[in-house]
Image: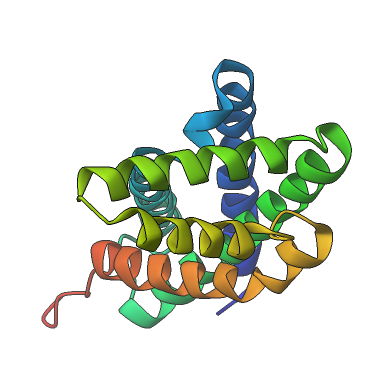
Length: 179
């Protein structure tokens, strides 16, 4: 991929990363419980697909005469996705460890409450529920620390790859053979 594509991908990743940070800050101010809701996770994923597809199509149309292979589209989105994820990771480290060090405890408690409600709605026996809630609490411990966030960075690359595959399929466009 040429340097122009890399530069545009980096710019795109910075844009999506900043949008993600702004949304996270708005939710932080409005209601932190939203941060750990499944609805928010799905909406964030859908918004990412939309934004990266938009940026990929814009790049394709402005720099590549309207045509891009799946491989080049994937690389473009993957680089942008990694940059966006890294920016969001740095923000998460700052938020959970410096801006509001009590937030991890609040979010952990919210996840436990949400899990308990779901288990109750499924009619899970109380001894099984207690065991499941202990596991959730154990799994959440340290997840918001600098080390915990960095340990989860493999998921950033995986997420960028998945978004790259989806958006690459959306924005690819072959040049007609007889043009």
